[in-house]
Every structure is written in structure tokens, then in C-alpha cells.
Image (cartoon, rainbow, N blue to C red; front, top):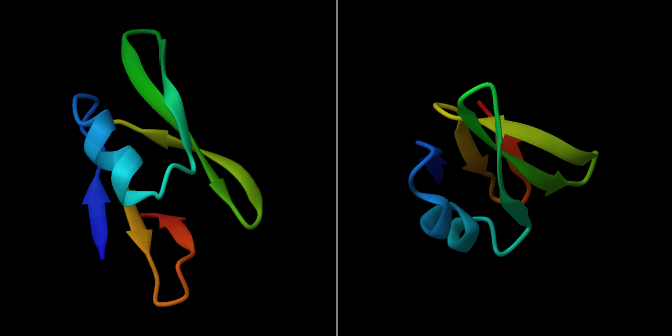
Amino acid sequence: MKIQYTGLNYPQVKEFCDGRILAPYFCMGFSMLSLQTKEGYVTVNEGDWIEKDENGEFHIL
């Protein structure tokens, strides 16, 4: 399963990520999120895809 972060769909991304995402922040006109993974927090930029694997772990594509 995967979802694309568009910068405008934070509620849907938050639900998809089981609440393991921090509220959006803005830098130089772009929206970004922080996603908690087993490796720590990673940045999700507008246009990035978030994939949830069969083990429930998240990866940025």
C-alpha cells in the first residue's frame, strides 16, 4: 500500500501512517512532514510516496 503526500492531504497521510507522522512544516515555500520509522524520523517532501510494507513498516519512495 502507498500514498503520495501532495502538501494538501495531511489528514489522509496521518491516517495512513497510523499517527506516526508529525504535523507539516513549511520551508522555502514547500510543505514537509516527519515520519517515524524504525531507523528514526525521516523527511517526507511534497510529491514523495510513502509505502507501508507487509510488516507495517514505512518507506519513502
